[in-house]
Image (cartoon, rainbow, N blue to C red; front, top):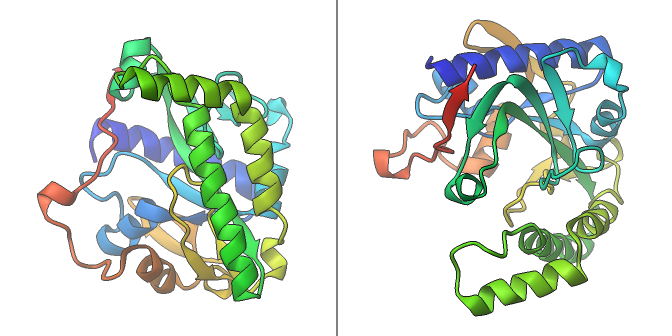
Length: 261
């Protein structure tokens, strides 16, 4: 593990202790689940940690009082945290500052090392209703991304003007509330299908809810964490032939820099 991965593992351990304390279900997910299955820990070039939670558990978690979060750990969530522009929560270590991408560097923004927490939402049984929900959710996610974009970033003047107009007509918190209302109509625990719809990008992967179940323990680096009971199905939905290691030019990272610890 490198320095960033080691610090992220500590954040993940702290988060899971808190979730277990309150009997809230979670699963290692996305690249973290892939790393656990394929590498027994971090993907060597990966630089973040992801978990997913059934929506019902997620809402209970973000409603926990501040006293449950012991320094240096904090919860960042769009309805609670000022200048937070992400439609899912992050559990952060406020003692570790990082600098992210070019846009944030230009604005001089510092952020903290984190674990991403994605809610899992249920879907309707009807393929048509699922298709309509997907279309609306993808549209709202794109609108959310535009409403949180920096209008002074290096784009054409016309594009920046359009972004300013969109942000004025559709403030990001208003768009988030529209998205939240759309994607929470179907309870995770009562649905046969599920999706992690709150990702920032426009993806919309659909999983059988039974693939998550109560979960099972899986080794990640030097500790055991909860994972979907059928990780194979989840990973095939996400990555296809997930045991195939991608070539170097297809290995994605966030490319952030550790500033202070």
